[in-house]
Image (cartoon, rainbow, N blue to C red; front, side, top):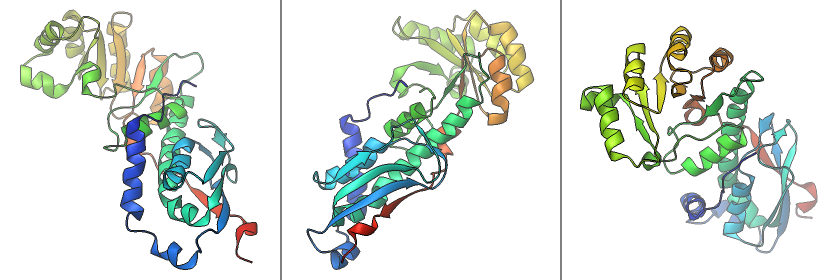
Length: 288
């Protein structure tokens, strides 16, 4: 599985912000009832079947508070785990484990939810089809690097990371300029020669216009299955074809067999449900 690096400085900052939000003023409950120096041990357990994503982030939450807390990762990101499976063992200062558990769980439950949803879409692509399941920029502001990593853990692919990563002419660009042809002409005149020009289209006539104007790729926006089939008869072999808008898992097999290159799905990130996990304190670490 081709996973991107998860620990650029931006990820460290995300973790620090989350901790500051939750425990900058301390944890009065834990501080009141747990003595300094007490050691603890707990397990991270799956409460449902899921694809795990974010174990390094989970571990980093605790080590950011106290490097002495150790997290033993018992599975790897991208693995399928059944309900009741143990994902990790946490050992160290009890106060740190108790104070950091909610932030750590928030990250891994959210990321694993995205990975699990992505895996379902990926597995809906019929064997032999080369269509890739891809995310979009519809991510939680500030958390894109984590959510896109989770998509990769689920077997999906990432779209452009930011607006500077590629030319994608959208409907409002076309509305501002006046036509698909003019938007592509301006993009071609401005963009570096190594950058592909992709254009969103919402009709067969716009598709033809985009191809004739020299687009390298098209995005079929909110096309019905019947119109996607018609579009592929026009576009296949001539331009890169991406399909997006109103995509449900039930539509994946039919669209993939039409030969589209990419199906991009905003709901992989914006509508993924956080999966159910918990941190279970081990009996032997209770006070005597």
